[in-house]
Amino acid sequence: MIVEYVWIDGQKQLRSKVRKLSKVKSLKDIPEWTFDGSSTQQSTLECSDLVLKPAKLYHSPFASDFLVLCEVYTPEGIPHTTNHRVKLCCMFGGTKELGILVGVEQEYILLNDILPYGFKDSHSVRNCYCSVGYDKVRGREIAEQHFNYCIEAGIKISGMYAEVTPSQWEYQLGPADPLTIADDLWMSRYILCRIAESYKATVTFHPKPFPNYNGSGCHINISTKQSRQSWDGVMNLVELLSKHHTYLMKVYGEDNQKRLTGTHETSHYSNCSYGIMNRSVSIRIPYLTYKNKRGYVEDRRPAANIDPYEAFTAILEVIVKEVYLS
Image (tube, rainbow, N blue to C red):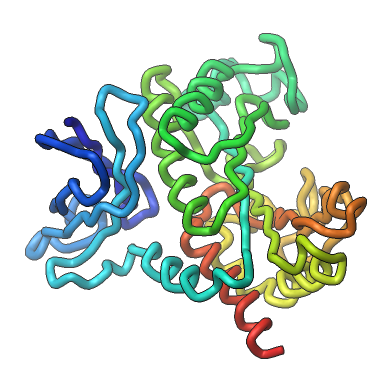
């Protein structure tokens, strides 16, 4: 059996290495492994060994048999400072009664060096949203292969389409519990970057690679047991997410202020707003939620490069703190 160990490095990038094992039927059959943390910005050269602890197993759509998402630990058995999954696991375990479900809308842009993949310049086309035709859309072969590979891996992918900026795509995961979606998001990013290698394309999750085009977000759709039952529950969720704007923005992605300018379908970085069916606000109440007077809300503030472990932990903290203090 061939297993690819996948982990998050010191710069929130993905790393992997491959190992041959005699038998793998479940996660418990995959042993811990070590790696050189000095080459991943996670340790010093003088004390370089770090430990990969298998956390979640996926079927591999590549030449290997399995992909295994790993947590990083020190040799002493302590979660590494870059291991943010541990805190989300603890938070999630204590919040199950609230019935919090999340989904994500992950945007990304395919590049050929510094230009949108397949285009000779960055001004040749405008507004590619859900477009068809070679004059507007490039990279569909990558996006479709990614969609199918995620299904094969067992990732909870639910949709995809071309976005506004040239060679920009979006895929959706969920809804499911925060830990499942956070794991799936990291592994789906890994699969995407692996596929792009074969097409000599680069995937960027930077929030604003092109100043005059829409940036890339990772919108989070959130619901609670209360919001799925009543309009009061929906508005309470909106209030919580708005009230803690400053706190949440700290984990909603690096360079996000370059994207959240109040233009290109965004609200301004310094303010939090909400509205019904409004894509220029921070938190959008979708049509069906408004119609049914119950459901989920869309937090449009997170950037494409968020660490979902950090972002979901903060969201749970905001909701749990308010619920337990009320």
